[in-house]
Image 1 (cartoon, rainbow, N blue to C red):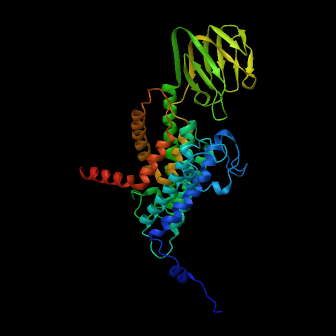
Image 2 (image 1 turned 90 degrees about the horizontal axis):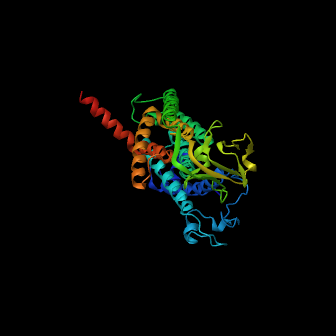
Image 3 (image 1 turned 120 degrees about the vertical axis):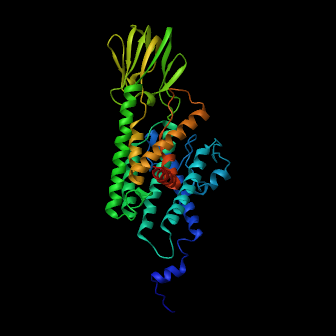
Length: 398
């Protein structure tokens, strides 16, 4: 038998050029498989469950493990018509959507890198930036769906995204300066500088907005001419929060308590704790327990029921959570200071449109993380060209 020696030239002859459209197929398939795992993360992390145990996915209703043959990305959900094979309970469309969106985003990022680098038959170091960009896409997908459902952004994901952004800037120094406003031909040091500067401006800039918002909108007062019913409502499932309800209006536990110092204050005319009448007066509810008007403190794990009547209550609230601040920093690590400003501006426009179309009333919370991510992706997939054209033409008019 004749031996065959493989070298770089041989591999180039065997595999098609990186500019060939065939590479979109593996990018799409990898994205779909990653999306399947992201569904596990999106479901388990907010509930405090391990993403490794149990190892297999399970039905949220009957808890039976899903066999590998029925857990094929995209195909299985369609084949089973969105239902569990065992108990026939509906499986949310979100599972299919995450797999499809992740697959499309992975393919789109490959197309973005392919076009930006002008790939040909030979490998370029900058192609390695594909990995941190795919990591960014996966983390952004998880953050989007967790924030949309639970109004919270896990900081571990934003820190991981920031590190990936720094790595991407090191591998492809032009990424945090797509509009070439800092340098036409950036080197490694330039990329790291723009990435670090973007993180600082993104994080501390939005943090200032949070502090100003807290000063202006830090409390929500509920006042009525006559005492109305209020109560704490236990969660119906592991996915639901404790609810505070007053005059029929409910507020989720995670919408009230952001810091250890936050407290919900109720000026009650009637108080019942664990079925027993208590003295009327100020009831102070913290994340860890309840202080009754007579000074007694009931830990939250020992509280079975709490209700009464009250004309007034003060609920702590945030204009924006710190998760958004960390997310803005990670966006800056990938796309620099210009990407930060564009993403924030675009996110604000997207949020306004969503609020109008969704008829979200004033004062109601709207998850901002998904809109920041949408703004960042808009920047990456051509928004920087719009900004470049606008400012170059604006400067030319003076």
